[in-house]
Image (tube, rainbow, N blue to C red; front, side):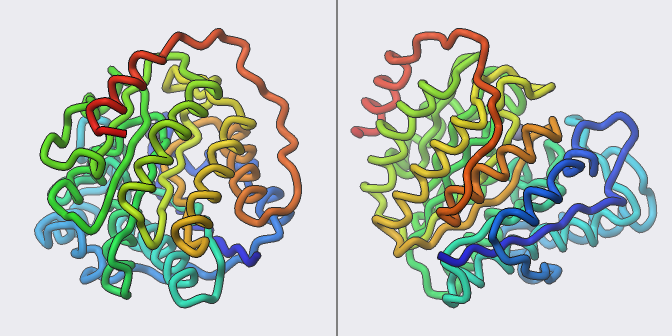
Amino acid sequence: MKTVYTFVPSPEHVYPDHPERPGRFDLLQPKLKASGAELVEAVPATREEIAYVHHPKLISSVEQVCREEAPGIIDYAPTYVTHSSFEDALLAAGGVLTCARAVLNGDADNAFALVRPPGHHAEPERAMGFCIFNNVAIAARDALAHGMERVAIIDYDAHHGNGTQAAFLDDERVAFVSAHQWGIYPGTGWIEDGPHARKRIVNVPLPAYAGDNIYEQVAEKIFVPFIEAFKPQMIFVSVGFDAHWSDPITMLGLSTAGYLMLAKKVMALAQEYCDGRIVFVLEGGYDPANLANGAEAVFVAATGRGASEANDSNPQKEPDCASRIEEICRWHGF
Ligand SMILES: [Zn+2]
């Protein structure tokens, strides 16, 4: 199995006291070196590639704000930009494109794009939620332009992937499932968000403290029938390590073992339906140790080598979530 990865740390994309900071990657380097995966150089996305998802006016306004007004806040989350952020965002999107193309052209079996700024909150016409351009959505459209007919995106960042949902709400070539904590930023992602697209736009709003056991149920009862129904030729995973129980800005309950379980399950789905074509894309995750351990777990699942060394089981009790999962399955006919 050949796994490649891109690494886009964007050290100048930084703002005082902001959780989406270069320090998120502080403990990552040894995990990358030990991963058994091969580093490929990220190539910046072009404006035309960004426009696969985003309105040209957004692209030019982000460029102009970075040139003329940065550093500053461009959205209430708060989402910030610095003088380098436009180029950083092009390279982050390009890092995902580089990974996806390596998988598409057969240079790699699978890939992991470790990039920042993240992307899944960015909507076609606005940057938001610490995200400037929607890296995973851009790469999904690029895969469609390179011969794929159906692409699925599985998002298990702690927050709803509203930007990805907005990009594909009416694009029947892409299916999207998001499992996230209900009631936190950005407030979207309830079960009935895409009534015209049952089985294809799937939201899994979870209660606080949902952890490894609940996520395993979500994977088996929702991710599996979601992929079975859509039969994608390629899977992207928006993986955010902010669903870890000790993340500083959310209240979910995954451990590193839970992240490994999820990565193995989506890998198995890619093997069964997509000839193994899968690209993991980093979204959030605001504790450097959780991010490094979680990335190691993704590499273990992707390469089939090594072991996850973290021992960080969740000390909190998980709530009962069976009726919520049943309700979601009923709504979609899973
Ligand atoms: Zn998040």
